[in-house]
Image (tube, rainbow, N blue to C red; front, top):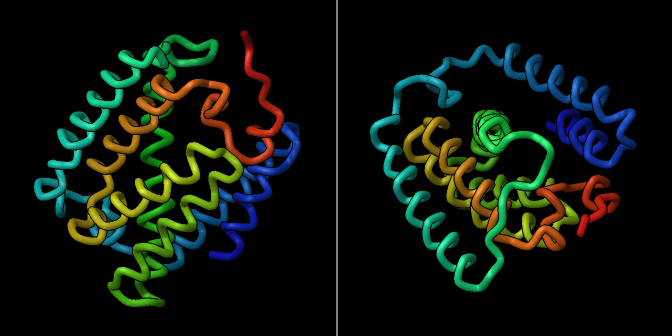
Length: 201
């Protein structure tokens, strides 16, 4: 766990020219750690197990996101997705990244904290706190990912399936991106990218 955390933090806080190397190292560490533990797909949340029980997270997320969009529209903060890519590619790319994050969060970190701390609330909170700290120094994403992390990890703890929570994660993230002013959220950047991001307009 420590090696993966170190590589991820290095990727988040390194100059752009070095980030790709650190992300590759982090990915390699993740894959090796998962491979040597010889897990079953269902234990990682990658099978059909728990899918039906956790599907409620998608309409629940849709309801919250719809309310957030309505509020943003009323207060005048609703905007289009920031960036040079078409909205559909941007959204699809973020959905894939949400799935990857849920694998790292739950299939990797939570499973290990669960082994160390037991199937307890403490393991859920510690995992969510780690998820939140990875989003420093973004003042919107740090608290949002702690609350979201509690939700995601608890759903995973109960049903052991990452697919519905990955969809919910993507919905929440994209909603934040279009409802929170970009000078606060800085295109969802974290680490050194947040500090160096220049808001246009």
